[in-house]
Length: 60
Image (cartoon, rainbow, N blue to C red; front, side):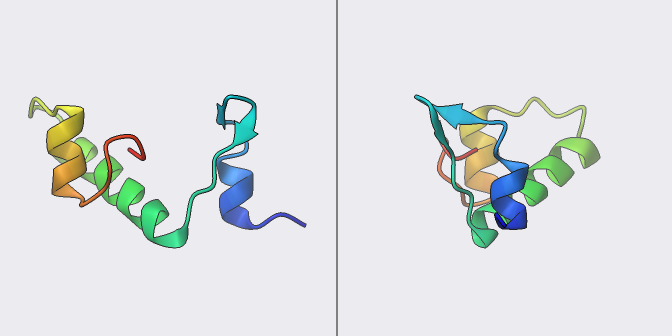
């Protein structure tokens, strides 16, 4: 049975392959979403949000 993380991202693909999301990345993605929700009025760029949660822009 696939892990919970792999099931969550199974809908995403990169050139036909499922993306793999580790626990640390998943926590950072949740942190990014929380930042967006809490500071909705702020004009976030992908770069600034990625830096705020210490995540690669492509991962974000």
